[in-house]
Length: 235
Image 1 (cartoon, helix red, strand yellow):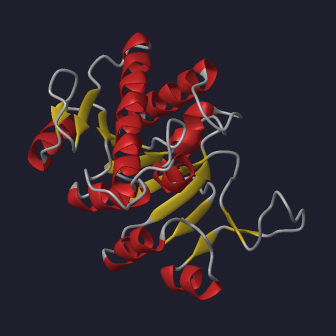
Image 2 (tube, rainbow, N blue to C red):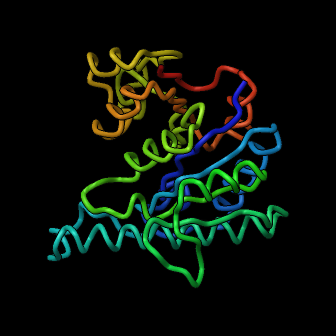
């Protein structure tokens, strides 16, 4: 169904049930899901978040400038990406390439769009870290931005413990209804919190399909790549 996909992984997915830090079992699960996705024949890039290390919106709590806080968050995404690359290699995917928007040449390549495309065309898994290198954005925006830049057919928005988009918080309202399909305008009209508004508008403007799904569900990403309805499709 798809030729090239970008997966947006949050730092929380790496932390598992904890608010911060790392979980070995979760990391292994995520690496296996990425490998299984590539095994379906699609090209795979992964945008990695860093919320399990530090969140830029906590700048005031720590008494530091927001730009500095966002810089720390971007470094957190690199830590997570190096961890994921290491686990991928240990599981046999030793061709995973890590690219960062912030130069850190001793352990990663700088993000260059054409080079990333060449890696994808050769079948490598491309890990994208440090967002887009700029403060005042979460990883939602660069996830959409990279998907558009790389000509991805869709963005897989991996959620941790939520299997799609609901009309209310399913953790608070047991009768909340999950949507199988939504248009971009439906999301805006209903005020549904799929991702940051700026990121969502960018996806809408470039007609980038969004698959919102539960990364905890084994094989969910692979099923999406082969056309099986999973989670919520927004297009």
